[in-house]
Image (tube, rainbow, N blue to C red; front, top):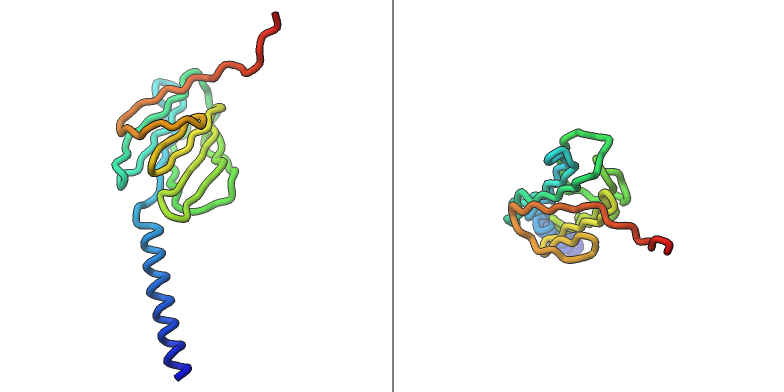
Length: 145
């Protein structure tokens, strides 16, 4: 009798675990390419399963020490913050993909989530193929009079 209960428990655990893992990964990760557009650093955000493709965020007037064209797939959890080709990833939640990725790049906080994107804590609706220009923000200090 105890052996039968053990077998049913093991089979049930395996089935539930497989179902949860498939649901966690079924949508796939964010794919963010660090590149250049018109000699300015840029991010190319893609998530084909959600219909979000070729969303470009350009940082005109900014410079980077690396000119490597690199695509990062955010499919595994990792302790944040960590360095990116330019900027830092300050928050990463990949429990259920695509999850949430928050980056600090050239003084701008960019957060990508399935429902929306935020830029400097302001919601920005997803629009596939959109090109967003982010210039350097003015100083927060006031000039002396």
